[in-house]
Image 1: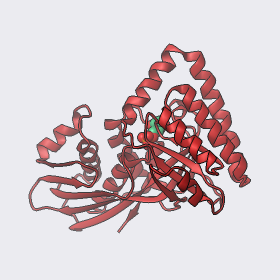
Image 2 (image 1 turned 30 degrees about the vertical axis):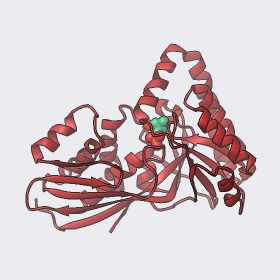
Image 3 (image 1 turned 60 degrees about the vertical axis):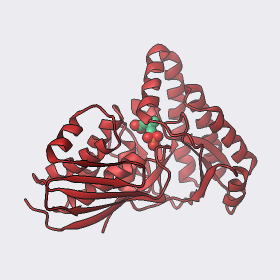
Image 4 (image 1 turned 60 degrees about the horizontal axis):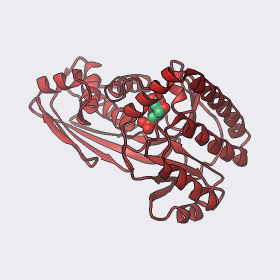
Length: 324
Ligand code: PMV
């Protein structure tokens, strides 16, 4: 089958995990939010079988069809692999292949816990798929999760789901993601510690701890479960004070799990002193970002309190993947 369009664009939002990261990998619930920053993917069909990838995230590559298909089967060693997997996965949905120019632009920091790899995979599947026909959101999510598996051996699937559907969601591995209906504003400040890390490595270190100290892990996991359920109730009641203090409590659990760092703890301390209602690391930890819940009109004060770090104010984004 030949592409029915020569070019297409898609975008997917960044995400934050408000509650439950890491424990979500082992079946506990997590609350995720899409935020108003996006990754844009532009694809143009070529007249040959080459796949050319270019990005402002510091990677690029040129692949023949055979090289692309081989790269997908290897262990993770380059940022282009999941993109090739997403591209080939999307074309397989239509039993097709074409050479492509793929341009990926991130409008937010990458490899810092904001879901850049999932958003890239989701937007790539959507853009490439739309050259040939229509893929449902469910299929976009599933195909992009397969691509994510190249980078993170055991992803929960939470990132792919939130980047596909947007909004605020309750996620449990293996179950259908559930949107949380609320009119909650989410005035957040995202602070980048400046330390990039690979999610798969941190997830592997947690898996090691789970095996060596199973009682400790189970205790933390049960507490995280309780915090997430309580947070869900607070979100439904729009109780900002409680949401904030549960975020800070969630961070303490992640610190005990060993995935925080001194820098992350220090940023959280500064943000809380600057008037944040609650703060925690978001995503895998080991570096990456902190999210702080700011009170009404206090995003500016929180931003001031973390001066010196790359930080931005953001809010909930209801829209997931978009195709144009
Ligand atoms: O750091 P990120 O954005 O890749 O988020 C990882 C979230 C984890 O719960 C640590 C792993 C997962 O697969 O859910």
